[in-house]
Length: 462
View (cartoon, rainbow, N blue to C red):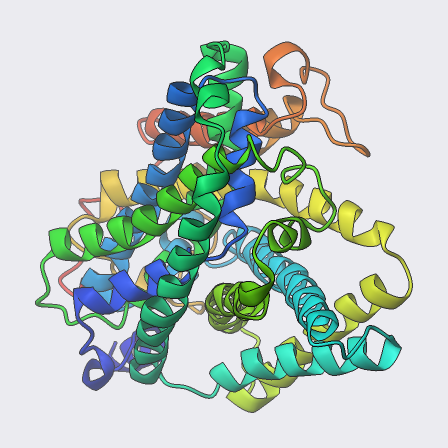
């Protein structure tokens, strides 16, 4: 049992983190200026100012899901998809684990493309100009910044995220304050109420899909390094409010700016739209801030992607893992920037569809923890050589939610038969995937005996 513990848990000497570390990690991950676009998107659902503000607040609190999963990581010193083996079985966990990895490296690549384009905009402001050469240089610089972070241990990473929080969080606030006077307050006040069912709910769902639900797969990856004596409530509150505060503030500014920058939510390059609205004297600082806001998100995606690779039993050295992800981070952006610009749009649609499987996974994970694991995880359930190969309850519940999610989802290259009315052109299918997976798990637990149920958890739980 000691060997299993060494293989799947964070070493005790590394579990020295404090709740404030989690606060800064998730604060830094949500200071990106692109949050302004989220706010403008909410207004696009024909909502009033009050409705839009409430939608932003509700959507931001989707990080409650990340906070709850973080408690499981803190209590057990085990990362997210390693814990997920209990709910799905070590083999049943493979598909959602792989989807999680694809989701992380996919959005990491998208952010690298965005970061490269921001550096190109900065080059134009500095009158360096844009060319294939400057594009390659910008791509290499941004990718190198992310890969170098992969060499940091958890303690140094927490300090780096704290630095990003204070420096780039402060700069982002300055940029937003400069933009605020452009707000047309009368236009905001005059916006009529929209439909709570066909406007408010889809607006909330589409933001939740890209924030709390999307980040759920990384929750325990960071809390696993917390000191076991830390209070669960402190860990939960640090994660939730570390994310909610910057995310809501930036989205709120996006709501305000929708009056002065009406094209921000539909522009192919919203960073340039925002930059054009700023005084020329601060544009260089603005683009540096935009890059700085993206870097923390990429750091979290890279670290969790490496952890997910290990959970898939692909055991390579840290340097080899960095090399693998580095190649991906270069190849996809090169294809987007130099060969097919249409690919990026379709790739983002594909990643959005992956979100349905992620939402269903999150529901099963949370339900399994709530019903079965509050007192700890039996380590043999997480051992790839153990008996817990396939937890039927978790796998079936996940499949039910995923199928229902797809039935109510439509994109340019996929359309579910029930993706009509309020379910068309939004992420409500993703919310349905979460809800039905959770309900299915709660019901099936009465009919399917599973490995590691409450009466089977042995004395070796952590």
